Length: 377
Image 1 (tube, rainbow, N blue to C red):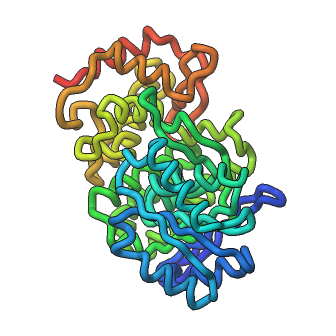
Image 2 (image 1 turned 120 degrees about the vertical axis):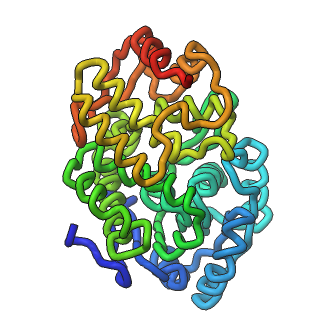
């Protein structure tokens, strides 16, 4: 873990996509440098900042000052916080705001916020004028290590999460690790689930390092920049090899098929469940289901659950407040998830910690039995 910068320094991770390669700049306090970073990447561009009301209160003035000091014009488009903003109604409002600002294709849409703002602003920038420049300034841990990297954008449908969207890569990602101090403990924990995911996919040594260093990450010590840089590098490497998820990139969905079904089942009600919490439960379910199918050891599933529970994340369906739909309905949500191909259920399963793989023909009957066995009592 010593190849990345420690706290107080910044580090850069490159996403290698040929002519469309871009940098993820990571470190504390770098929001103040956003104007200079943007001017270097997109000289002469004007900007529309898309943010939500909560984030705007914390960070908008700093970003506006940084842009104005670099001579970069900006308009602000504000949306409501929360998953419900990933809708056609909010997409139209953002698109109208960009067009009203008279921005041209060579200008830039900046997403200042968590994953919801990034997904929404990214989708808008991908479709206005058939594709504008896009800059991600993620303000949550989850967005810094996952949704801001890799170009997936989108909104939700009544049929499921993220079913409407486009692949549209950013030109620059600015991940200011000091912004994470404004998150609630619950939001920070939810983002940590995605950090742990990178260890569980293909880096058992990273997962072991997290088991030892998670308290320093939560406290904002040197391990925080390390963990974010390592996570971004892990995702960047996979995206560079498989940008549009025709193969290996699907591994990044570890825990997401179960998790998305649970989010749909709770109608995206963040008082009951937020995305990272759903992923935490989903990753434990994926490891336990793998053990049930004799693909992995029960010990590994228990170790994953123990670590996520130690940091304060939910790990079982019974941890979700309120009633859930029956198992048949949950299975329909799983089948509607976009990891389905020609009707066969596709899951990311595992042979153990750091040994995940794509399982394309998982029998629905096995999943149903597993869900019944795990019915909240």
